[in-house]
Length: 350
Ligand code: IPM
Ligand code: MG
Image (cartoon, protein in one colour):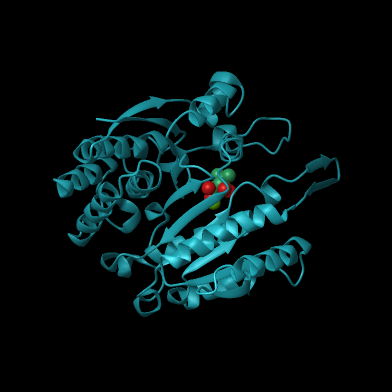
């Protein structure tokens, strides 16, 4: 049986708890699809700061780049919160991995489960039929531009190159071709120069995809349309910061950010898979975190990096079945713990 090497980065807060369930479930399902997983675990984020003084060591980055895939839990927590620019922050680990591994395309699918329609703060008739994919640029823009701090002044810079925009847009158009054939490019072209470049490049990429409908939307308007008519979106392509904000907003369509998975991909098959939610320090260590976003991220890993789409479909279906049967973790108004949800998913797989 082919053995694939997966770097496991539990991270901080609820990270280890949700990662534990994803690993258990992947170990159960992968062999049935001809795969065994060689997991190797490493420190990243706050736990790495505690051990090594930095959120990501060169050794860990190297171990990840030599793997078939990377699974990450979450990073961050009050222990490492600081506004001092000279102190290490857990998030630097995550950003270092994204950029060090060249994972420029971040896919965040949002598809509310009919069983959870009542859990969303939006009315059912608004969210019914929503099936959208945020394709977020992940290694450029404000997150990686030059920045600085002086006593009474600070700055961050947003830079995009045509190459960065076009490779991301290509991802979006290719994804739309396998979906409903529509791309919404979100920018702030009425104000920002990077957004005007973004728009021009996206129009150029669109010329190579004549069957895909392209619309442009300003980010403030997109934030509004996402809650007023989410079902009209198919693929959203957007820059790093806008994608960060809009994907949290879109998560609430499903009722909880505890449900949203993500895949970060680059030029090859190496990908990093992590839930969209954070480390939730307020509930860490209590066994109550919802593991579903991480389990669904593991399904994306089986699909995009491990070449096991049938296994991914089975995981997705098992989660559907658990929710349809009425089982709920606390973030969705229920009382089932992390392990119990994991057990139910395993039972649904069997
Ligand atoms: C995300 C997170 C990260 C981001 C943080 C933790 C740096 O919010 O993955 O959406 O802003 O990209
Ligand atoms: Mg975010």
